[in-house]
Image (cartoon, rainbow over all chains, first blue to last red; front, top):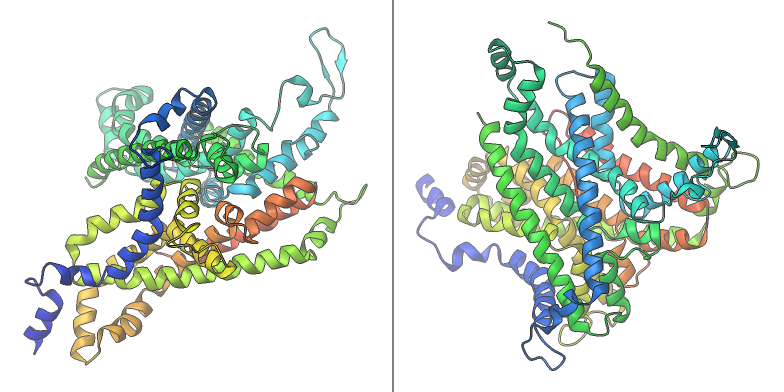
Length: 305
Length: 263
């Protein structure tokens, strides 16, 4: 009886369709709502209006408008992933090994979980309410007087008169950092906690100071995790749409915004070019995720030590 | 040996706390300033009494529940099947489960509209058909979280032994799944469900482009036309995310922490 049951469960011999049958509903769902939509775009990217194969749609790379949207997206994502990555690393550094007071570490780890998931439209609202033209901080700053270069008091100080503008790429970077650095804290903390105490003791015994320990031991060990986490941040920013749309009303041309406008009304004047634009995004995201997974594997190897 | 607090660590920690709290505090105080000269909850009253808010909140909450149910019904048997019958399919499943990260939501909605906006699979003719499409999109978007939640939960229990025991007692597959596996996974599924729900409540793109009254599109609309209500909405939305994460933390005390990412 038991042997028979075991056979029913383990059933080594029954390869082929029988291993698939239980996954059929799931695969059907994925095929319908993920694979088919993707294929529609991908095949469209390589077809002209009459359905013939062409690479001409990728000439959007010569269309300064579309190319610029890619460059803006890449620039914003790169900047926020670097700022968020570096800042997040230091925050994670502060919260591990009881370097900062315990209550601070507790607050920071709780809020990292919250802020990493706080995005979209509400995040844009929060920044507009705080740093927008009539925002809370802007209003506070307007009430503060300070001495200008010529010694005369400038009062009130309106940051918008001094080159600051929230509704721009700079404002977008400021807002994205709100979820980027907490995501860095969440992804890099396990790696920092995985640094063995023995390593710093051993390097101290060999006569190195703290700077040398970080330069020759800790950072090289952490490098794959740092790179991987930063790449994850890049992808996180690259695919974002809602915050940018709500913050700038679509006046900053990210690829996602561009695709959004293409869906609404074919701004590129060629539907297939829109597909090519979307295809390019998927390529960049795939590269990002593959790199991240490879680096993550490398990290997992020494974390297990 | 008690280590002394590192001044640099404190510097970064304080800076991070400022980054967390200043926008939150600023938004909160701003949201109280609707009535000139005094602090009041007028903006909140205005939002909460808006029929459109209630309608879109109800719509998104319903969609959130539908998404959770469909995700569980779809993923639980599949992951279980992989553990019991087809462990070789695990890598395939893992790759599929991260595909939604590779395909940004704006690209997904583009594909959905172009695929299901015209024959032979046209779904956008009726609002019900569109809702089916949106729900499917939400299931796809939240799949990585739900998959991971269920996978982690199953890894921590002995699926095989439980199945054998239940079968020896005469259960069929359906009974094993609903009476043995599901109860053991309730914490994992609950955290996955809360993440799904929070994702749906905060999502803008699907509801906006498929023109259904989702909370995200409502918020975007308010942001274009009003000054103080958006701040109140941001605080409400903050509270909602807070609640979902707090519940996850509460239910999974002592277990490995969940983390949700991506937007």
